Image 1: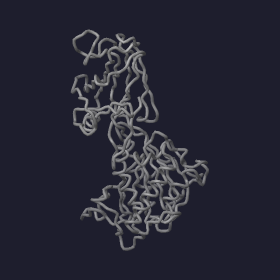
Image 2: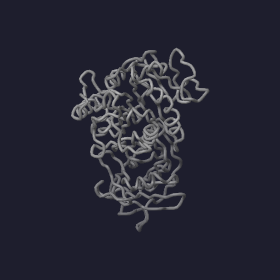
Image 3: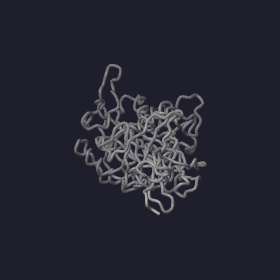
Image 4: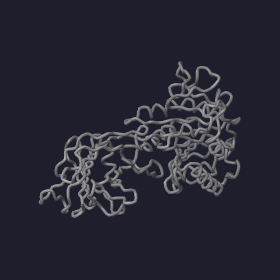
Length: 439
């Protein structure tokens, strides 16, 4: 099956990957056995081969072999919905300048305790990779070493830090260190240039693009206490400058690879920031507040800083987070639990794909009559609902679907998709009729 991928501001549209088979009824000259492939949504590119079909009449109604609406029974897709997630690649870039040792120490502790642990416990499982773009070494030297279990270097005392610093990073199936020194203001430029540039240890000789998956959603996370000033990007610590940088970098990263990062109409990335901005929604329990949502009305770009000693508010990073649907959090408090937990939740949401089903090819000599489409939802073997077809997304409700003729897909409306998505025993059955008189 081919599936549509779409993103909303924070989480991205929820949905499911479906494993099943297309069955052609003998009344239309088709075989009783059919196969389809399911891909683009699970843990890597996967496929499933359907078993034998049941054949027979697929629609009820008078007229023998003529089904609903007078159409011949010609094709059925019998799809079993499973909450299988698509891959996610998380690209973290960390400033290695003089003021960052405490921030890097905190990241080492949080990246396993409150990020990888949540992802590893996700159900259904998350197929994720973390790509670290930052200088490798000790946090005392403002470099980073990611320990086991995410990285491959032991942490026997379980304090979140590597027990020793080997001569080079040790990568794993879920972690890839692209060692590259990031200075105070150039994180955005390095994300662009290192995409096609080897790391310090030549682990990715042609750039970190080597370890990105074509079918994955991308999360960027920048951690710095400075602003943006490199090449043509300069936020000037201003709101307008932040918006300008966000628009320009978005254009640049989309041009770098539409396959990896999407298009302006359908971005395949979200940009998150831990920067020196002033806190959002502070309280006595949380003096550094809550993660700032990607909402320009609720939490616009701010030029305020989180402490009097903070360097720059990072308005360019703020603008990118708002533009792409990522959250922001102050560096100053040096407790990043909330933002790492929020990001793990965002990764899990971003791994899910929309409820869209490719319309199959009809049997030879037949033409599908899309007006006859039936979509039935059952759970645990009991039928729950039959969804009605509406003419467009604007007409959607919780009991409906529509046909996207451009994508050649049947799409459950958002509320219907959410209902099915939440049901681990959900099964979707889609049946089609053929037009009469087509030979």
